[in-house]
Amino acid sequence: MSLWHEIEDLRKKKAELEFQLHSLEEKERTLEERAKVLEERLAIKELEKHVKIKTESVEKLDARVSELERKLREQESATLTSQPETRYDVSESPMRKLFEQRSQ
Image (cartoon, rainbow, N blue to C red; front, side, top):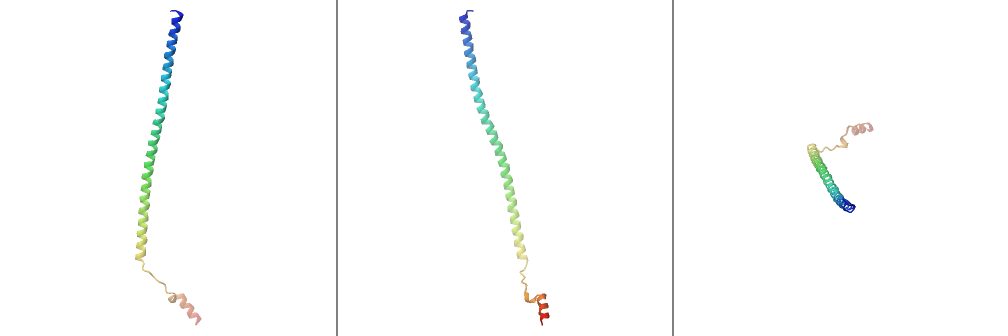
């Protein structure tokens, strides 16, 4: 093979390899970008799962607090209605009578 043919073959081979390299680099960039998008989607899905779990937990706790507040109001209401209002007449206190007897 002549030197000129060999140089021509080498240039063709070099051009093919440069084209392959460029194609691979382009594919690599595309795959890296796609991987980043997929990683973000996965992270979002994980956060959505945690938010859902936390929301359910907060809702249960809120319902529990509401129920406890309702029970407390019922008990307070029942206590107020079951206890007759007693007024203490100071003039009838045993201490007052004792002091009155001593002062006489």
